[in-house]
Image (cartoon, rainbow, N blue to C red):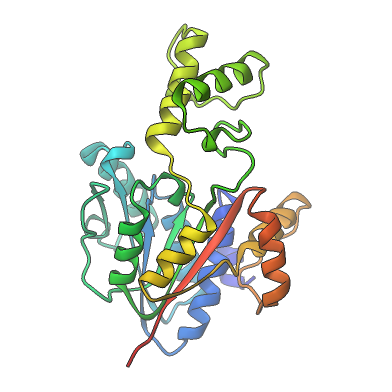
Length: 297
């Protein structure tokens, strides 16, 4: 870890942020001669990942102009005025000279992204793809806004994941019948084997209403893609698609658990070993979908 980064005492709020930073640094190492780098955080939430990347890149690449952008969608709670003011205010405290008001925005989930074609060098998302209603549209926008030769990395759980990653109920995301899903969740609430979401709770909620609230969330706000779907859409939009950094996410988690500093960049992977690990890890939790837009001259 560079001395400048130690001086800033950078610490990620989540292992997911450390992992995406590692992927980003691995991608940017290929673009050493490029002076301006544009990076987009899809579904940027409260701006924690953007702020962490900003501070990290300011320390690591003092001679580069790294521009960070982000957006979130109305349908997932990003209220236009309150949300934007809060995120822009937070980011301005880290980078007061950056025009965050021009770089952070909100849109509808069916709206074309407000960026030019071939604009970004790197597009990231953190636990977003399992909430996307139209994956075909997202892949098409990634392909449109990514520069030729640019990269895209998305950390999220696939449909093959055994435990639903929000309420931690096994197989809940695979149940399509609403009444069955509600009864299934109700059972896990009764045996106190569920993770509660404060945003979905109301005072003195009955067991029936609580199970409906969680079932409604899974039905309306989650849409887990499969491995085959991700690979098919990547191929459809002419992107080189793999899950090459999946193993590195779990190694970051292990380092965090034993008190080791996170890796800031990743070494070249072993393709066959990594694929074998991916075929197991996709049932455990998050994977890393990695794509590169073909550099067609």
